[in-house]
Length: 269
Image (cartoon, rainbow, N blue to C red; front, side, top):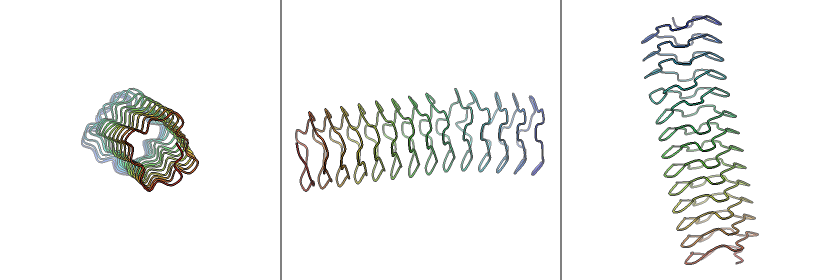
């Protein structure tokens, strides 16, 4: 059924397991309760489709359009969403642990409280997404865009965020301990009350970012651009700030015991 046009069809409880539906048009189709196990839906149009209760085990959805689709409560851990458009999709209660989501569009999508542990989100677009209290432990967010995303109270420990764009993101209360954040863009991001113990922040650009009361013990901030950043009340004991740019940076009430500051530019305690 490759390339078929099923726009608006009612396929309630349909069995399409192991079917090839490449580039098929399922726009606004009702697939509720259906079976799509091990099917190939590469490039399919599922915009606004109802997939509630659908079995997507080992389903290939690479490059599919799932914008505004209903995926509520689904187990999606073995599903390939690479290069998909999931903008505005309903994912409430869905399980996305270890899911392939590379180069996916999730901008302005509500992912709050979901389990995305171990998922691959490299190069994905999460601009303005709601990830409040989301489990993102051991997630790959290399070069992902999270501009203005809400990551408050999210779990990101042991995750990989090389070159990730977190500009103006809200990370208040998030756990980023032992997270790899090299060369991340964090301009004007809010990292107040975050856990950043032993995090690798080498070369990050965090101009005017807020780290108030953050826990940064033994974190690595070598060569970081922290101009105008605020570390009021933060704990930086044992942190490595060598060669960091600290012009206009505030450390009022911060703990810098045993911190390494050799070569830092503009440090005023």
